Image 1: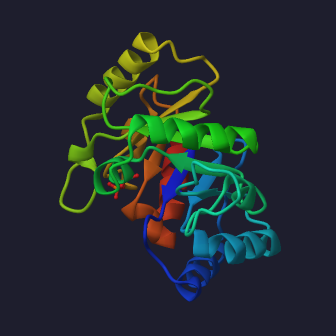
Image 2: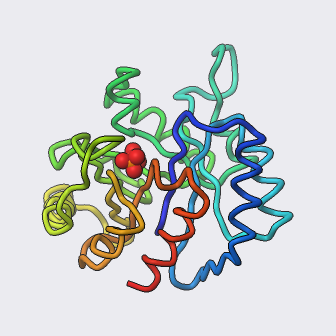
Length: 224
Ligand code: PGA
């Protein structure tokens, strides 16, 4: 699974440009080799949904957050029910949300419950092997903060594989749950991550912002 995470980036017109570029790169997405999920800001869910359907690109959409409440008097929040109309996935527990928005385990569990109730599939981020994973998430993204963002370098793939195995065993993660790695993944290093036996895919921030690089990530992962 290749998941892109646009974080707080791109206006609607920039997002449309990205899609046009991607479809122009004779984008050979072989759905049988990998699934592709793109997590975008809320403002882009509707236009992306429409364009992806028009262009018939096999990319599933994800939101980057969800309200811990149902619909109602919660100013500024986007509920799971609203997301479900436009996206299949949601990412919860990214370390940037834990750090910059002080999201606690308790809050994250409430978000997971709301997402589950609406049938959204969940990519749950954890920064290390000690952080607990709620039951019933679909994907666990192990993303060491020391490897996330500009100026950082990716963790050694062998080490990332070991941590992922550790998480799987110690937290009794079910065999159906995919385990992915995130943090400075690039077209150059993606093959070394997906070649590891316990790494089922990757979560990419910066590389996913560039249509050409995103397409290369998919090609290089498929070839590996
Ligand atoms: P990065 O971000 O690829 O820019 O390091 C990864 C992530 O936060 O998902």
